[in-house]
Length: 379
Image (tube, rainbow, N blue to C red; front, side):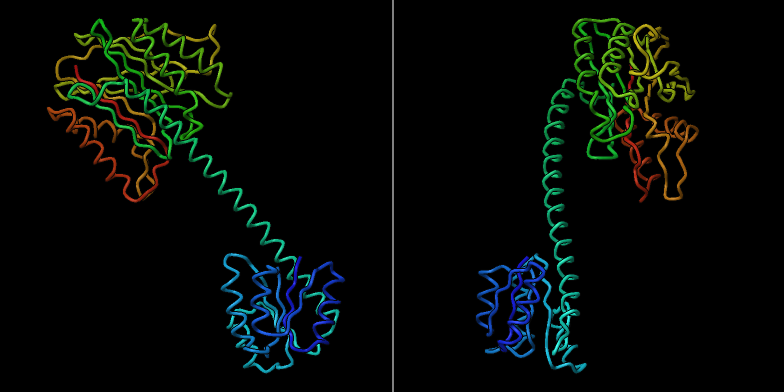
């Protein structure tokens, strides 16, 4: 710890030096304004003591000058002066001083105040060190997020683009989306769809996305059966995810004539808005992926059919649990009404945009707590 002592009187420079050195503080003493400024620059002290009266200038101006030179560093400025009127003390603190000790001062009192300011300096140094470390880790995390975004986005470009047959909406609650939506038409004309919702949101929720996407697109190329793919995804996630994480999802195969074979686990019921306005459901009856070992996993499929102008809408629970400014959840009934009205539109793209708009209006200024995924398909 280093102290700069600025005092015109040699006796006080000596007393202050002796007191400070007893506390293992290194002291540099000067007697004038200009010497104080130069010593402050060269010596970089942790604390400064000074008098109101300084050769070549004013103690008030010196404090302002030294505070400006200190930048972001916290350096206590302690006045020691025989001028103890309220006016002088007021000017001392207004100029930026951190303490005032009247002369002649008691050595015990001076040591107590000195130790107090030494603790403040150490605390501030520790805070600066921790802030620097936090800044470093934040930068590293941002770089890792950027890299992961790049990898995942690159793989997801293999999924089909939005059209009048398929529209995908993914709205993140954090910088990373823990939901996954993949759609790809196979060489036999059947369309394979996977909509997955990993536990939580953000980067931790995306750790299983990469191997799942690889398995999905390999299955498209290999024309793998849906039940086999479901079992394969479960084995992958069971082996890599921690116990507290899993992936709810739908795995769907839709043939060119609208026949649907699907596996569903842990997801809200998907809705089919029939062309006549009636609502039908795909039901998610299984456990989510990544919970059960292979010998307990159930890969049996269910079936349905999408007729001409019917719309299949798959939503993550982030849609159902969306809250408005009154802390009210959207819920199943309102989601069903929303889908029934919005997807009456002949254009699937316009219907999806209308749904997104209504969800945004419902949320208002409230915080989005979970990732939102909407996948709409028409035969």
